[in-house]
Length: 116
Length: 113
Image 1: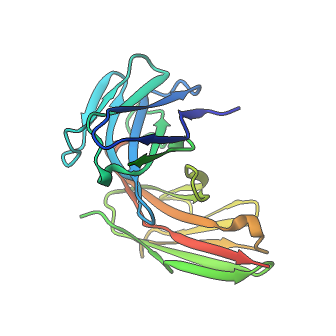
Image 2: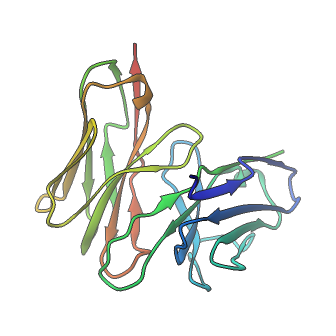
């Protein structure tokens, strides 16, 4: 019954070694988001896809990239992880079909990234 | 600047007791307000969502209220259980786009036996 699935749940990578986190959804939502959440902080939006259109937040480091090959899948690539990138990474989806509609965000369980 | 502030930052209550969490926001123009429960090491799970015209919404033992005039919301938990131990996050969306979402920093609730 899982609707937003993230793999792996825990990821350990070495400093500077590229890593990819994956997210898939069974909701057929057109919007997918990636958030970074550090301990005791609110999730911070990194970027999102509206359909195939990529939208980067202004303060998201260039080190973070994303791919969305189809509606169901979205990937977060961290090209050269630093110690400060250790965090929980949350994927979320929502449906946005027309202006003024109120849709919820559905979150995945998150991937906990450790950088050694 | 859109902001969402939650209080208290953390709370410890005895099992079976009630508690109320607060959320104040300055998001404008307002579209909707959501409360999420986030267990440690998990993603947030939606509890309630309210639009401008709604001033109360329940989900089991959780009841959320919204006062759009004062820009305040509360989440009341009745007869708390150990499984209620989690962070509760208030999220407010502005009109004009699905992406205009502001998160509060959450209230960490611990229910003890």
